[in-house]
Image (cartoon, rainbow, N blue to C red; front, side, top):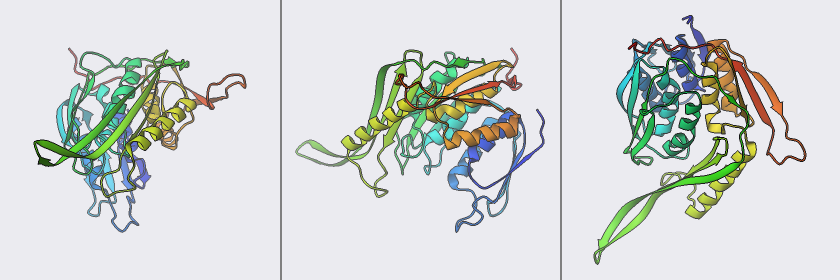
Length: 347
């Protein structure tokens, strides 16, 4: 691919730009990163993300100015292999894992990544949500195999962290085009509830515990294999308003119903992953029905146009009055760029 560079301003959509730069081979320069902030420059979690990219690539060139307000990134080849990374606890492991899901299939060697840090927080997708929704979506594009797994070794909550996640992914030379246009009816709803306790004291041979943090992930599966998800986590102690577990559960259930109402074949957190895999697919037509596009997804489409010169055909589909199928849907259509994994080892 062409290696001419792209320039951007500001810290928004930081991961999008670096992930697409790595896949396209185009260098990127990001200027004015919080230049007017009282604390200008890159945050610790962004620096940690850059270090992770450096670990999974070979030959990347990264330059940051003294104040951290300008970043130059020349991507190297995606190498993969065994990687260990301590994720900055300002963001959860999900922040880093979302990027690895996009990069892992296109590496030279199968990825075995051990990520340590916060597994559940109120900001980023949890490992449970990504395992229940992102992995099945990737399988529809032909990314599958015995070595494709996401496992929580141990939990870790903000602000201390201490969690550990193991992500393994095989490499693929090409991505299969898809036709995901019928979400189907809901057939089951499953969930994962987590809570972390701290032992306060022992008296009369009894352990007194206090709940430190808790969260809930809900996933609805349809007859055609689509997934809708919602999740909530309590805020770390001393941050934000406290919430009762029963209120959190009720609010999370409402979020799931809203996600089902939005509909489509891919839920909101995974829209950008689906669009990326459509873009990188073989030179054939892919169609995916989505719910209303999130602001993050809209910006991702702009970046796909910048890095791969791909524009999607967007058709709004309104449900008929006698159909009770939620809100407006968007049918996304594109012809893949025919991306071939040049990093994959020949055997």
